[in-house]
Image (cartoon, rainbow, N blue to C red; front, side, top):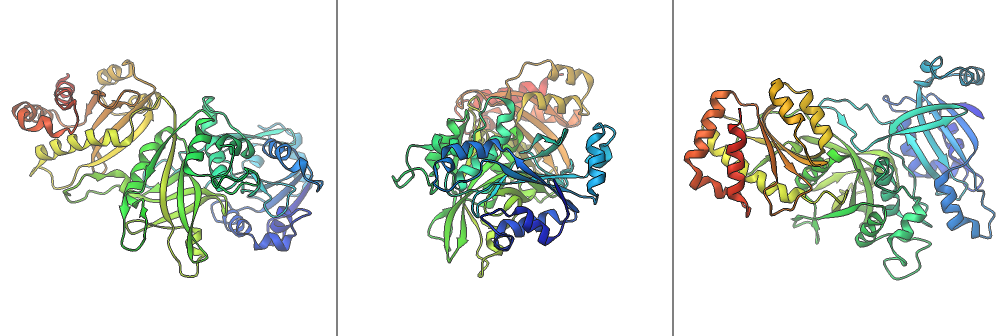
Length: 513
């Protein structure tokens, strides 16, 4: 055990090993990122604690798969480097590990996280868990939805840290896509429906050969098909969202920022990190790369003028946070224009060329059968009908928040809402599928209505479950009359084979006392 002050030289020394000197460490992008991240105002690291002889399960799997068979005698134990946001001496630390956790509560509250250093050349950043930036509950603050609680045992004391594990690809048993899947599974495996595997196991799950037909190890990267196969073998299925925008600047289609925000917001409710396949500026070209999104920051919603097209709450997303194995955890990614992203790749490029999204890979549970696009068609019909009703009455546009949720989480929201007790009891005692789509209609910060749909049904069925109205009684009564009087003209605005049933569902739910 060694305790050091947190500074640039000590950080480089802590992250080094016998194959990679502190000078070589300082050249790495990871070092630059970790120094900036850990020294930020929000994490404020002050002390480094080095734990030698640490056994990492993930590295042991990879060691057995590849490194143990090398002529070079690579070690099978690692170093774990811990960080604290306060200064202390070795004597103070020893005194606190002898205390009960409760008695040393104030001391351990300063724990920031750890980085595992693998005993291999250059690509040595292993299993790492660090605190996030502040994670508020307000809409205007950060929402790290793709996190889990880690139990960290340090010299007899169990610590808890809410984060998402990170590691660097070693380019031997894992490339960027494998590492992105590994980070995603770190969260998805918490519910026991999914299997958490090491990078080497994930790569083997992807296929028997590399995308170009060559051997799998050393690994050169995974195709979209191989990514999906690896996800399937871990107990999940994939929805692939392809690029939706063709521009005059690029010879290929890209994912628009509007669409990207809609998808990330929609699927964040179930908490599984989302994988983006991106094109990064690299040596004058755009190379393909994979990152794992686990959070976003939204601006406070404001009333907007009426629009011809449908408006979405997700447009308030200001930035996203992603694990990029070439940089570090919770990398800030900003939006620029219709389709450009500003990432560390952009900031490190001489011409400041933007990062572009090629595909979105959504790992989801097999029971989720209704996609965002399936539901968006129904919500578009609701938007058109309600826009007709409110025409000339309101001066702001209707804004929709569409998100998939666990039904138990939805019921917790209902329990804490301002609804009348009788309505709460009705909703809380109603049997629901495990996953539900929630479509909320807003004007600025005010919620007007909330529609619930079965996410496990088939898309040509009428999947509506309930409608909650926050409208005053007199306006709700006028809406019901409006719907009944204009049935022939409005019921087919649902571009769905069950349009008439959706219209009847809307009237029936609004008419409930």
